[in-house]
Length: 304
Image (tube, rainbow, N blue to C red; front, side, top):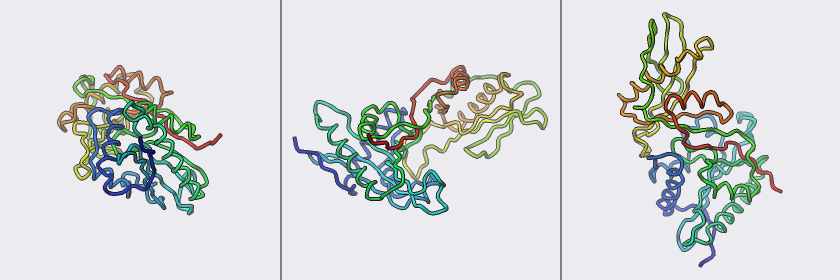
């Protein structure tokens, strides 16, 4: 078996890289895949990250190759040290994402190839002389961020290299829109649809008093990116005023969101909650959501 080697990404790697990315995406969220154009475009810029992306000074993509096959890949970022850069990102380096083939009988050196690539990543971060080293798993696909627990082989590479989870854990939940609560708004309650911060906002009012709102983002599959995520949306915000908690308003808001999502052709809805917020997770579960994945966010390099 030829020894794996690490080199910079070449354009003719794009199809194999996309296949490797999509294998990891498919383990996290059902029915989602990204195109070659989406993957290659994300190597150059990340338009959704409109705050942090302008802070990036350098981007490097490396691949591990064995028998002319791309068996692992990583995308690295170096952030500038200017005053306009946020404190946590200033002069930081990051393994923005890392994907690799899991160990298998037909690829016995997969683990060695992944470790070889990670060593090359650490060497690049050392050459950049960054202040701090971060890691993530933010592939250019909806819902995939942090380091999903569905990727134990990637987690093992991170931990062998000295990265440690120091952030929070997020629970990703999924519901079928048809299975969301079917309850009326309630007596004297009206629902107004407006533009929200994270999607379309549906606000419940009693007269002129706002009781709470939900925002749903139906633009996860943008046509120019050729992402296969049709029928998928997520909850950008769900807020209920303190005095309305425990009244079932969350169920009524989700019911109104379900009506709107059905008109949009959306049949699945994603929600995100902190692992520690058991009350919120329980409420969503009662509304028809089931746990899809858990993802650990915030990894820092701590060798030794």
